Amino acid sequence: MEEKSIGRGIIILSISSIVLKVLSALYMPILSYILTDEGIAIYTVGYDVFIFLFALTSLGMLPATTKLVAEYKVKTNDKSELQVMKVARNVLFIYGGVIAVLFAVMAKPLSKLLNSEQSFWVFVFLSPAVFIASILTAYRGYFQGCKDMLSLSVSNIIEQVLNVVFSLIFAFQLMKFSTKWGSTGGTVGTTIGALGALIYVRYIINKKYIEKSNLKQVRISKSKKREILKTLLTYAVPFILIAAIQNISNLIDVITIRNLIHGDVNVKTATLKYYTTIISVPLVIVTSLGIGIFPKIIKGYIEKNKKELMIQTSYFYKLTYMITIPAVFGLMILSKEVFYFVFGRTFGYEILSIGAVALLFMALTTIQNIVLQGMDKFGFIINLGIATILIKTLINIMLVRIDSINIIGAVIATIVSLMIATVINHKKLQKEFQVKIPIVKQSKTSIISAMIMSAVLLVLKYVIVNSFFMEYYTRAGAGIILFVLILIGVIVYFTALLLLGGITKYELDTVSPKIYEFMPQSLKSKVVKIK
Image 1 (spheres, rainbow, N blue to C red):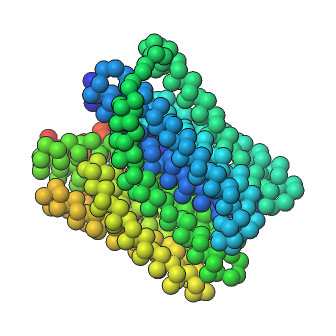
Image 2: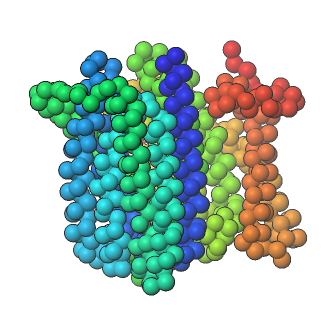
Image 3: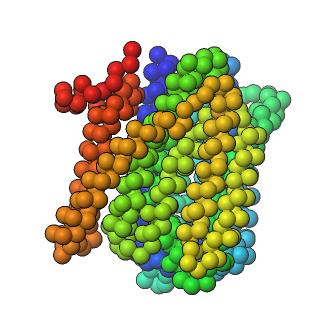
C-alpha cells in the first residue's frame, strides 16, 4: 500500500512539474513579445540573480525540511513533525528576510556589476519574492515529508498561474512608460504568485493537519526544539551548497556576457535566455520520469542487490537516452523553425542548433545527482560541482570575448563542464554499486532511431516544406509546419525503436500500461517482453 502511495505521489508531482514547465514555456514568448529583446535582457539580469538567491534559500532548505519531517513522522507518534515545520518556518523567516533585505540594498552595485543599471528596480521588486518563497518552503517541505504531493502540486500550480497572469499584465501596462519599467512589471507576478501559494498552503495546513487532528495544543520542550534546529541546519548546509552550485551557471553566463561582449549585449543576453527556456522543456520530462526510478536504485543499493542495481541504473540511462536523444536531433534540425515560431525571429537560432547537445548531459547529471544525494554523497557532489563551475567559468572567459563566438562560447562551456561531470558521476556510481554499468551501449538503439527520424525530417523540411510552403511561412504557418514535423518525427522515432527491439514491455508499463493497450497488434509483437 505504501509503495502504491509513493508511486501515486511521484506521478502527481511529475505531472505538475510538466504542467509548470509548459506554463513557463508559454509565458516567455508572450513576455518577449511585450518587452522586446532589450526588455528581456533587463529582466533576465535581475531574474537570474533572483534564481540564485532562491536556490540559496528555498531550493536548499526544501529537501532538508522534507527529510527531517519524514524522519520525525516515522520515529515519533506525538505529531512533532508539525513542530519541525514551525522551526523551519522560523529559520526561513529570518534567513530569507536577511537575504531579501541584502538583495534590495545591494541592487545598485549588483546592477553595475552586471553592466545593466536599468535592472535596478527589477532587483528591488524581486526582493520580497525571496522572503515569501522562503517561508513557503517550510510548508512545502512539510507536505513533501508527509507525502502529500497533491497539496504540494496544487500550491506550485497556483503560484505559477498567478505569476504568469500578473507578470504579463504588469509588463504590458508598465511598458507604456518605458522598457525599464516594463521589465520590472514582468517580475511583479513572482511575488504575487508566491503570496497566493502561501495563503493556500497555510489554509491547507490549518484545515487538513491542525484542526482535523485537533493539534492546536501540540507543544514540545525547548531542548527538543534545539535538537530539531541543530539537525535541520546540519541537513540544510550541504543541500544549500548543492543548490547554489547547480543554479549558478546562468548567472556566470550573464556576468561574462555583459562584461566581455560590447556589441548588441542586450540582444545576445535575450537570445541566451530564449535558448535556456526552450532547452528546459524536455529536461523536466526526463527528470520527472527519472525520479520514479530513484527509489528502486536506492533500495538496491541499501540491500546490496547488484543485479537490481544493474537493471535499474541501466534502465535509467536508457530512459534518459530514449527521451533526450531524439529531442537533441530534433532541436538541431528544427532550431530555426522553433526559434521563429516561439520567439518570432530566427536571429540566434544557431545557439539552439549547437546547444541542443547540452540537453543530454543536463539530463544525465541531474538524475545522477538525485541518486548520489539519495546515497548521502554530498561531499562528492559539492567538490565535483565546484570543479565543473570553475572549468565552465574559465572556458566562458576564454571564448565569450572572441567576437566570432560570443554567446555560443557560454553554451560550449556548459556542454564541456556537464560532459566532465557526467563521466565522473558515472565512475562514482559504478564504484559505489560495484557493478559495471553500460552507459554507452544503452544509447545505440536511440541514436539509430533518431538518425532515421532525422533523415525523414530533413527530407520533409528541405524538399517538401521549402519547395511548396515557403510563401505561407508566417509565424502561424511555421507553427503548423513545426507541429506536423514534430508529430511525424515522434511517430517515425517510436516505430523505429520498436522495429529495432529498443522498447520492452516493462519500460512501457513504467511510463503507463495504457500505451501498450492502445498500440496496434502489428506493433505489439515488436515490443520486447522480459520475464
